[in-house]
Amino acid sequence: MTEPRYTGRATNFYVASAATSEIVNIAVDLRRPLLVEGEPGCGKTQLAYSIAAEKGLGDIVKIAVKSTSRAQDLLYRFNGLRRLQEAQDRRNEQARLVYPYLSLGSLGSVIQARQRKVVLIDEIDKADIDFPNDLLDVLDSFEFQIDDLPPEEEDACRAKRGFGRTVSGDRQLPPIIVITSNREKRLPEPFLRRCLYLRIKFPETVDELREIVKRNAQGPLAELADDVLNATVVSFLRVRQLAVGGTQKPPTTSELIDWAQILHWRGVTPESLEKDPYRPPYWTTLFKTMGDLDAYDALAQAKKQRG
Image 1 (cartoon, rainbow, N blue to C red):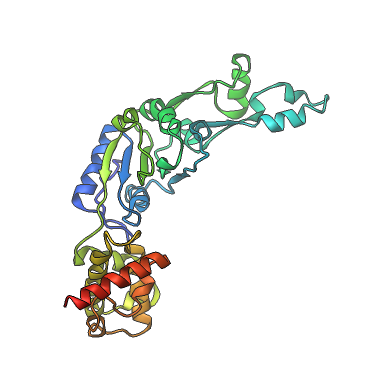
Image 2: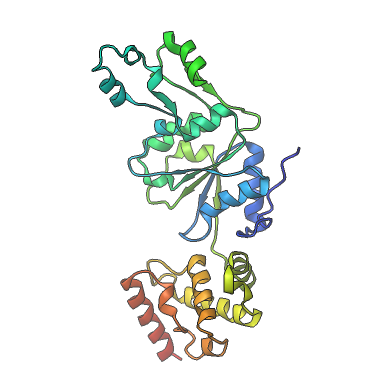
């Protein structure tokens, strides 16, 4: 069966622009990792879920990167501590070997199984600079070496664990790799050259945001009248545009969806959203910190004074 092309609009939870969909398809065709950047809340992580859903590839393999993450742990792990503990028992002949204490990591397992999966490496910029560098060749060839496995144990490891010193994937139909970054750290240039770059911009039109709310609507929110939904999105865009540049975290789609639900629960009308355009009902729920609340309130007051 031919794998479907990505459209960005075939799921009930995500909407991608035509430009974003095209870059995704190009990355898949080139068999290159897709490096996705954009402000928090613009849909970087959900893009991976959307690709997997549209292409019918099942659950994604998500790797949440931390400051302590090592690239090798994504490929394989050697439990030296357990081996040392078991070696205290002289009757345990297994402790003389290495392979019983080896296991494949999440990325290594996908490569070894030759699975067509979407692999999400989330927030790669949190890790040390060696992390992306150590992944360069693996993401290019979908092959890696297990140096900790002694050559004399390779046959036994392959028989018992299903892998040897060299683990090779399917280069013709490899996993689809989606990598997100918030640019907390600058990524190394050799790594950037191996990736196809995609910048996701925050949706700025009423139609786009209305569609996002509708697709993520659950329960009572699904019954939201069109006139109320339109007024909610227009009001949200007004608040967000004032907040951008003046607050640390301007409201995103996540806050919009929650806010729309709050307005629906409280019976807020389109007319009431216009009474104080830059401080509409429950506007404080759109912000996450005291600093942003104070900063936005000052911006709204200044805007009102200027008429």
